[in-house]
Image (cartoon, rainbow, N blue to C red; front, side, top):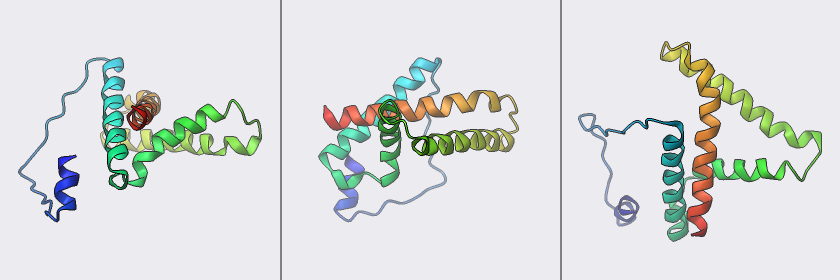
Length: 131
């Protein structure tokens, strides 16, 4: 919220390669999902207060979550295309990241983690918009 307000008042944000941010890694899958839920909830709250502060891509996890829920109501075969595209991108990203980081075992873990992160963030975003 403070960065948005400063930027809105005309302050310039600068990049410094000497500055780093430490992110604490979560010890369990549930705590990681909770972390991303909180990230999404915070972005949702910010968007509720300042609607123009949200870049378009921050809406995608919530829209995808709504889309997944709507699959129970629509039975047309073309309606599943976005899910197939998502799964393809999920696997392709997992392979690419595993190769870049030289972690072949990650290929088996990342395709499951990415959807959990996206859905946790998306649900948090929706909750933040409402509450």
